[in-house]
Length: 192
Image (tube, rainbow, N blue to C red; front, top):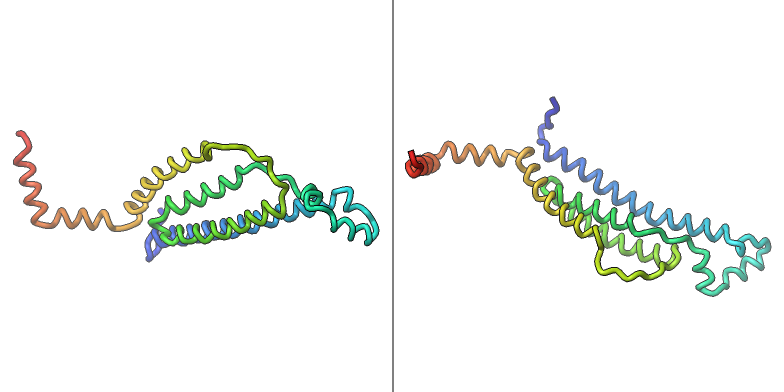
């Protein structure tokens, strides 16, 4: 049978969450910047203009208009990975906040960095998307709503199964005289 260490299960859970939460954020940020940079470089490399051989032609290519330079950027994919990343972060930050209370702070710091990385990615590394009018974030709102409800249940179970809080409360109420008198009063009110 698996048992917790001397620090308790909550400490081990917090360590695992810190590694997963921070590691995932750092890897996603590197991946989010490096992949578009490589795609953009490859797209420019494959363009017919870049294939010109002499240095003077290369210099004239670098003096093209901005819209011609934008045409050589990588194609923008859908926003599913962006939404998924935010939903997973929200899940870690809310579902296990009892075990890892600093997770919302790390999520805030990550979101500030993420805004800057996304700005660089969407303005310098990817082609401009065709605007589409949307009224809301769609199904993602329902997912976030259900995750909030699940987070309440998850945090309650984390408290119940990894701490001594419930056993201490139960011991307190079963050993005090006030609790015994209260139980006797309740038993008297019940019909026989």
